[in-house]
Length: 393
Image (cartoon, rainbow, N blue to C red; front, side):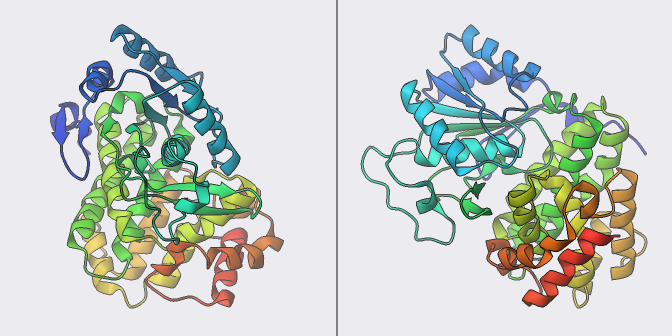
């Protein structure tokens, strides 16, 4: 396979669905980008696993060189918890910050966006829960400017306001959002993903794969999201194995960052049972989200794909598969998961067999379950969860 593409090594600016600056080395623009947006004192938000990584120090230095103040908030867990969002809001107010820069993986993005939602109002975080009526924001409660800088190619969380947060008291993940919160800039610099370990490259990349597949399978007519899902799937299928095997390959890193972004936009249409189950597994057992999704994917595909032959054909064509049947598509997905080293069961990552009924009941309350292409009973979701725990593929 050809593993270089000058297109992925050049800078590109896109205006849809938010301003996006793509290209190697473009983090260097962050100071002037902030000044152009009227930002003088941003709060940098990342997860506690990323706070000592080089890109944090580099971001601080670039902001300082532009004459800007900045502080760091890094008390965000891999699966962000509601109490951490409250603490982040307090840090935003205490530092008199005027914006938030989210940098890191999906947890950093989710934590930052949730802090943005609460930063200038007295509403409870769960007032922004996706299934609740959208809060009406009063005068002076405009959300602070938000810049997103993903350092993994997986969650695609950089272009929207939605965030997954764990409700500690309920042991469940919920989606929070507000339609008026939009990133002022998503900065996609593939150089920031080059240092990602092999495991995280695989896990976050598989997350993007799941986003593209689940979004495309959501029922309903949404050609914008469907087109992005298929193009994202094409990029991910071609370049994920390369990124895992050749971590310094900047073309592969750039293609994955782009594919992840496209798949993240596509799931505005919705997701499915992979995410519904994964959210609740993550909330209870603090598993890595992309890894959990990847293990669950074949189990849910075997449940969802019968009757979806035309959509499967389109996805298989996007992936360049010679066999466009349901069986051929699932086999190809499973082969890719094997190739990038995904475990074959949830038990291998510490999920016990006796949780299946509880996880399934919670999963059916997740908003992603509502857009699954096939309606599922509690008994069916219990069976899917049990299968994924014991032997997913």
